[in-house]
Amino acid sequence: MSKALQKAPLFFLNSYLKPQSSALSPSTFNSRKINEQSAIDSLFRAHWRDVCRILRNCYGSGPPEPEDVVQEAFSRFAQMPNLDKIEDPKAYIIKIAINITLKSIGRLCKAREFIAEQIQLTEGQFNEICPETILQGKQRIAAIQKGTEQLSEKQREILMRARIKGQTYSQISADTGWSVADICRQLNGAMAVLESFDEQEHHIRNSEQPNNIPSNKIAREHKQ
Amino acid sequence: MNIQEKDATDSPSTTLESNKSASSIQQIEAREWLTYLYSGHTCATKRDEFITWLNHNEENRHAFSQSQKVWQTLGMTDSAVRWIEQHASQNSEPSTFTRSKSRLITSASMLAAMAASIALLVVNGVFTTTNSLEITQPPTAFTSSIGENRHITLNDGTDVTLAGNSSILVVINRNERRVNLRKGSAYFDVTHDPSRVFTVTAQHTEVRVRGTAFEVKRSLNNSLKVSVKRGLVDVADLPEQEDQSEHILQLRPNEQLRADINGGFISPITQFNPETEFAWLNERLIYDNVALKNVIMDINRYVKKPVVILDESIKELPITASLTFAQIEPMLAALASAYSIRLTHEDTRSILTKE
View 1 (tube, chains in turn orange, cyan):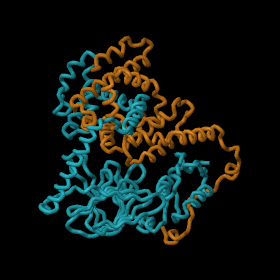
View 2 (view 1 turned 90 degrees about the horizontal axis):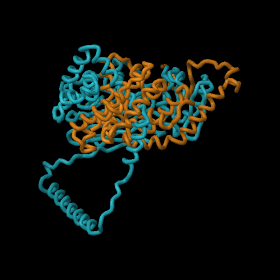
View 3 (view 1 turned 60 degrees about the vertical axis):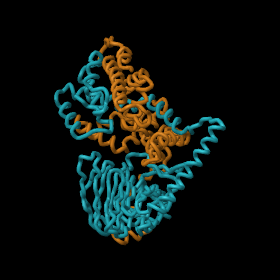
View 4 (view 1 turned 135 degrees about the vertical axis):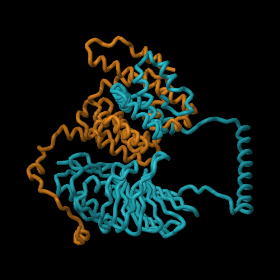
């Protein structure tokens, strides 16, 4: 960059002329888009403070700062297609915010990268199961949701601390007083329940004859 | 297989036997490997064992992929949202409990006794064991507010300039000089001291110097940029495991390096123009073909109302501009008139969208 550029008060290069007609004509604005934008603004005003509070109380004050995460979450939410199909936007924004926060925890990133490398997933494939793209996987989410409802309180607490709060076994142990061995056992039991619900949903989706093995039977076997 | 911690009371083989009726051995092993890999207590040997297990047959790979999908999907459930809402409420509730008057009196007496003991310890520390008494010094936090740079002189004489909305934690004692960049960007002009290395850490990257001038900046996606103005700077990626060796690169004046959130170097060492890079020290921002998203990230350090780009298609728009901090508002308006961008002002933020 030249010295002249540094001293210049304010200007842009690389700009291009706007098409005058589209720039000035209000008819070019898509009314649906404007409505969506307005709805997102209302959502932002209504929920950003509470979502910041939730993130701060769960993950601390950063970095990344909860305010930055929430801004980013709303930004990603606004870019999602089919916003009108989302029943609970606030819950959705929280899911995106959790995802963003967990991606900033170095230890978890390393684990994800290691796993992605071993099972030859690209970052894109890894991100297929993320809030912004998950609308296609509704049935799988419903199955896992049903599975979480079958877990014992203890299993759910450990599972959520590990998966949603991103805690290590030692941190969970320090917070709850449960032994690391117990935490391992409970976590594996909980995952077994969820996988059985996921498997059953998979069979139902791929076959006209629903699988006759009741998932709740497997859930009972793994509940401790 | 013995995946979990050695002090775990249940060996995986026991778990295997008891679960055989419910699911296949591959599935059980897969979930145990998955929970192990996310446990926060992994080691290189176990990871190698995992690779061997995973590549043993296709069933193992399939089972592990299934477990991974379930683990990922869990974050999308309403149960996760309910849990985090409850967890946040529990964490924010103050601990409220009632105590009897006598108990309070007892507590007050105990507090008085403790205070007296501490006073005695301090007196002893000061007058009898001054040479050996080590007091752990808590870090001192320095934060700059949005809208202005902040200049600080640390007690070793090092000058620090924090960009707007930045924060550092500092520990300086007779043995060490440590700074942690918590957010934003900071420029250090370090006082030379051969006996104490000056280190700046951010995420998994550490910068080590003895006397030099450099900037460390957190960027989008939590990546990190280190730019050296004067002297020599060692940049190290801090290994996650103790058995891993760190990777160190040395930067010379006008050299720059970028690292990702894990400390991995994501670019080779490149040259930069110091007058452009350090323009913010003189309350000016200069960009030469820089993506709009990066320009906005810098601008947000100096505007009270954050600017948000709500249109993916304009985030990478190359911007070349020169402006002072006072010109940020006109610059945003000029953006809208120069490009096909719409600027909308709301109560809490300004929004940039494509027209």
